[in-house]
Image (tube, rainbow, N blue to C red):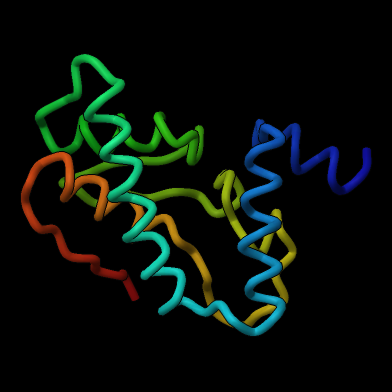
Length: 136
């Protein structure tokens, strides 16, 4: 099986996943995207997604863990993740938006928009400020 076919089948990617990760990857490869920029983008995108969720979704969960699960499913982020005490674990080889593994961004470090996206979406939906914490 080819490399790209494996990625699409193993992660259950849609064409939109490929398009979006390729855009983020291109920004990284042009040298205009790093983790700081990714956080800014993620915060903005998450707030916008929350506005769509508020207007288009019925039965938005109120419990934080259930709401995080809802956001991950709504955005089709991954099929393999865990949520424990409001902490999210997404396997990198199952993430559908990885700019490095799917989009082939050639950067050191991370350029993941998802932590900021999830936090800002959660903040907007709960009308409560959440902070991003990275495990080291």
